[in-house]
Image (cartoon, rainbow, N blue to C red; front, side, top):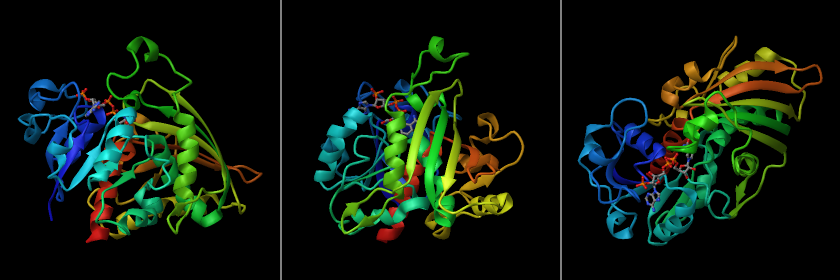
Length: 343
Ligand SMILES: NC(=O)c1ccc[n+]([C@@H]2O[C@H](COP(=O)([O-])OP(=O)(O)OC[C@H]3O[C@@H](n4cnc5c(N)ncnc54)[C@H](OP(=O)(O)O)[C@@H]3O)[C@@H](O)[C@H]2O)c1
């Protein structure tokens, strides 16, 4: 099966990662790339390639078009890497015209009828669109830091329950898109604030761990507090997590095994983008962005510094690739799951 897809915002950083990851994808073929300032230009002549590797040959001669229904109506699926304000306006319109939109933008993540999906964690929430799949829909990929955190929390939540989660993020500059933070602000520096990031981590995590039943998404009932920093790293978000489980955890080795053995529907379904092991547990002074950002092509997260305190609190440092697992790769994985589920 091969489906024609469009990438909205294909000249941006996340758009470029889509183009890279879809170069050899067995199910999805990029037919349309949209842009704003770049609309009307030839991709290979206009776009400055800002991510790893070379610009794939297949996209070089493609003309970037504006994000209008007439250019999109013939594709089977839309991957959106639009800025949030554009997504707020454009994505519901496309869905209302019967298009299937899977989005990286934050605009609709908390909408009451829109699933917010990490396929290993809450793919059952996709029932919300599978039930009415003949119509258009929006499905969303969470915020990049939220995806990394949710993958780490899932096996702990299932085994021990969760009461309280505190997370401090150290997020790469590529998380702000291109050109992102001016060099003078971020080189040799740390910015202790990323607009709206902390609320996203808190609210999105609770939606992901909540239930979907009878058309309603309910929130999970553990507490979560987040603090976000921008750090001078190119790829990969690191997060320091401190958490309290509902049942007491004593066995550190057992905890590490539960994390390391974790897998979900994408692994069981053998999906193309699914990492063999979503979580890699490491020892020593790791994870580090330089060494761990591209684990399993950027689709797996790395967990290290795992400790259990005498009072039962657990801490760990976790790391994941914001552009792959946290954006384009995670979105493609959702699409693969949906395609398999819809037959
Ligand atoms: N960077 C990350 O790690 C990350 C992770 C998760 C989610 N996200 C989300 O993914 C989205 C894209 O992020 P990014 O990092 O790729 O940002 P970016 O590098 O700033 O790229 C945004 C792109 O959107 C395009 N655009 C603006 N208005 C448009 C329109 N009306 N139609 C089509 N394209 C339009 C721009 O195209 P022109 O160049 O043609 O003007 C630009 O290339 C954002 O919503 C972001 O929050 C990003």
